[in-house]
Image 1 (cartoon, rainbow, N blue to C red):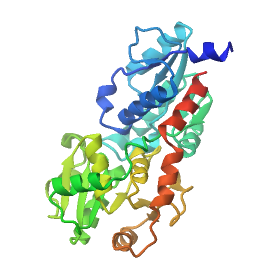
Image 2 (spheres, helix red, strand yellow):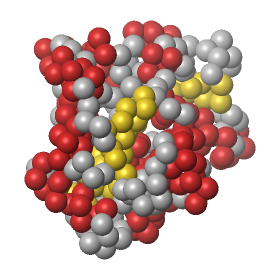
Image 3 (cartoon, helix red, strand yellow):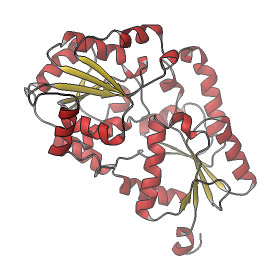
Image 4 (tube, rainbow, N blue to C red):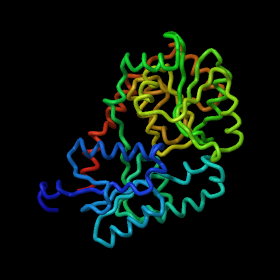
Length: 336
């Protein structure tokens, strides 16, 4: 390697390609985080594939990204493939996803193997990918969180309450994600029915033609206390975290779950499903866990009514450890 000054001049192409197809998903958010993280640590980057670059950073598994990877290699450039997807989190998503899951695994294996290095958000995802027999080294690095943007404020709480005409004392439970089985939406709807005294909000949107008929029907006929505002801006999501009493994350499978980091940064109480990816979080330390509808029902009441200890300070500390400035420094090392 040359001098540190020379390595600092390395320019990164964050390849956008067909990114607009996933712009409203966690992958879109991860790309926005990468740009912000690189800005904070002074790494020069471009989104223009015709620009000069030394390293290409790929985030999607569409054919154009694989083509870009091969093109970069032919030009002698280094390729980082960011593995946001696994076969496990592809299952139980859209119509036909379970049928195509083995094919999906073969395809992503082919894509990821084209990189010089693979980055994935968690050790859990890294272990899954290792089991696929991938050739390049795999590094686990969080997608990160803009902890300053998501910090809790009274003003944000008031904006959310005013927008949705909620009284100061009204108890509110929220979740964020696609309308897919894997995200636990059917359980969320069931819990809203069981707890009519609380208001439930599910933020996010998926084309109804892509989701299972059972979910489509449930969304079209929700109980009176359940609301689907759809896809909203980042600012509105922050206000929702700040204005709610509980973030309920019922997902069955994740590679990280950026929305969980957002909720922890906003210092809102968090209740999640007890799944392997979150095994490093002990129940009752940073957040609360449950694994059945009955347990969720019981814990929602205890958390919302203040009958369990407040863990939000501990959760905030976890979010700060994954701040974009920290992630930017690590990305800089990987690029060099």
